[in-house]
Amino acid sequence: MNRVGRWLLGALAVVIALAWSFPIYWMVSSAFLPTNQMRTPTPTFFPTHGTLSNFRRVLADPTFVASFRVSLAVTGLSVVASILFAFVAALAVSRFRFRGRKGFIVAILVVQMIPAEGLFISQYQMLDSWRLVNSVLGLTIVYVAAILPFTIWMLRGFVSGVPIELEEAGMVDGLSRTGAFFRITFPLLAPGLVAAGVYGFLQAWNEYTLALVVMTDPARRTLPLWLQGLVEADRATDWGVVMAGATLIAVPVILFFLVVQNRMTSGLVAGAVKG
Amino acid sequence: MTRPRAAAVPAPPVPLSGTSADQVPRRRRRPVGVYLLLIPATVAMVVGLGYPLARQLVISFQKYGLAQQFGRPAQWVGLNNYTKLLTDPYVWGVIARSIAFCLVNAVVTMAIGMALAVLMAKVGRAARITLQVGMLLAWGTPVLATMTVWQWLFDSQYGVVNWVLAEPLGMDGMRYHSWLIQPMSFYFVATVIVVWMSVPFVVFTVFAGLLQVPEETMEAAELDGAGGWQRFWLITVPMVKPVLFVVGLLQVIWDLRVFTQIYVLQRAGAPTRETHLLGTYIYSLAKEFSMAGAMATIMLVLTLALTGFYIRRMLREEEL
Image: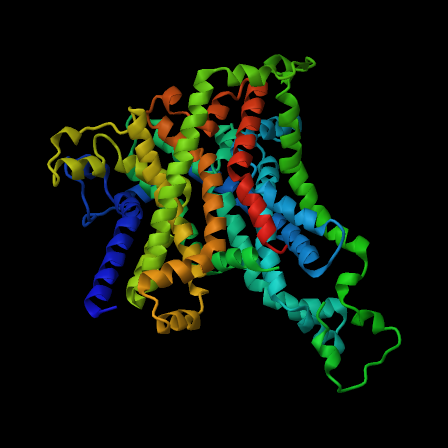
């Protein structure tokens, strides 16, 4: 390709990148604007006279703090449970041959096709009959079930990527089976486990639909519910506060995400092509 | 099965007695133990997904409403709920809209995503990283956070979209335009948002696939006189086809069950009845459990019908 063409393509890529990230820029930039500056005929594109008052108002809001706690508890529980369960299951399907192995893998694939958006009514009924509506545990149960299939799929790719011969070599050199596993295979799997954990974190932290159905009590809202509640609360939404809330919820996630996304996509591709 | 490489190492004589069992590859040992490893995940999925699914199926053949919720036994009504739903032209409208929305979104997402993945592979380092960061920002931001921004962007009074259309572009009629009142314009906004959110995943996955196409193959083709387009269509596309397949399948599944975006936009002031898709329609039936169950089952069948062909092919082509 000639140089001009290459340069043009590069410029195109940059323009697309800017356009694509504009909503995120807008979210952060609006979060710094005082209310009177948001209600002007001409939008303010650069918050040169920015203020932190929107952030202060969010952080001082007790409902934000309460929702933050609920979100943290549900997310933490979901991540720990799904990693543990998925890890041992992935170990089983990629390290052993046994009757029903293929059936299990097919089931994992098919389960991901089930539209959760159709299931939520009966999930609600189930939790209701167990008195688990509006409870962290109840929401965790449905989250773990939703996160597991993909996590197992992903970890299976990672476990298969560590040759069993490495472990066997360690055993020849005098390690016990457990020792060989924890000193050789486990460290090699750490990136995979981190990626799986982050996937679970993102799912649980960002999830809206099931939380909407299960957490009907305003005092038990997760952060996404809280944020949407902020939009709907008044007749005239205070967009500055909403954007500050959105920014606060999003920034940790984006940082997390930037760190691990590479592993996540490669994990997906690996899970899709490896035996 | 491959022979353990370690066994070929001649070095120190391994004490044979007792430990020799450990030399046998672990996959042969303790078949019962393997099942123990599967129990936690299986139980979690059966409780969280399997049981509700079974329950939903059962309820969809019963008359189950609020009275039954308070303990009255449910009555079997056979296919009544299904016939009631499937003879209602409104339900068919919802189904048709959902399929149309799903296909349009999946196709647009795939087209843009593939184009950007190819662009990403073609440009220099700096431009590529810029594009990657832009995509990551859109991908990594929580759905609800982006939904609130989009509501704000399309706000009829102070939204940037209306301002851009009215001021720099001079379309005066758009100054206070309400985007969500008309169903078509509602779906347009929803499509913009869904595509914006979904494209990054396609870009990164396809890009990862493109990187796996060996350089040598490309060079060989070039030496044999294949032009750029030929190389793309005859080598690159067939080689990344498995990835495209998986990604396309996921798009169809995700776009058919779209809920959050539609629900939030409806709450922002759209006429709900005219804008329901499957997910929000089922949600609106929530108080009539049997109807919701039947509708959810119809949605499941629809998903399988749209993707069954795909899944079968995937299972056939893949070695599990």
